[in-house]
Amino acid sequence: MSHPTGHPAPTHPGHDHPFAVTVRTLAGHSQHEEVRGSETVTTLTSKAVAHFVDHHQLEAGSYTLSLPRLGQAAGLDPTGTLQDVGVVAHDMLVLVSRSPQVDG
Image 1 (spheres, helix red, strand yellow):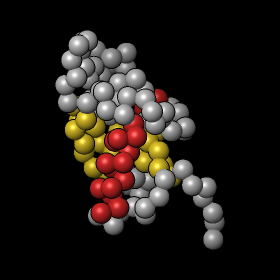
Image 2: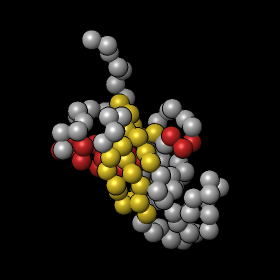
Image 3: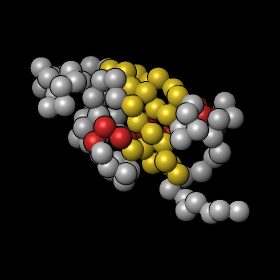
Image 4: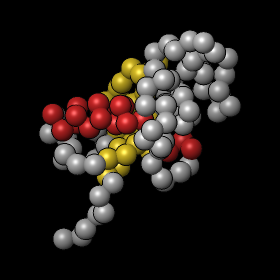
């Protein structure tokens, strides 16, 4: 089964198989994650932020995930599942700060 984007669909009806995605920071650090379509955006965001903060690659704070493949600058719905927001196998998601940027 194929997703409309041409990527393989992450799940089949009635199944919730794991698939791989990459989460990046705006500084270019990346982490590969194995996820399931039923996982929420908030869960993946929290795991990714914890990883990058633990590795001193990101400041602790409030972040959202964006999916550049969709061409939207806005963050994904944090309450949605990965499947519901259109995340598929091998997608690259980007952590974006929810805090306003201040030039200093």
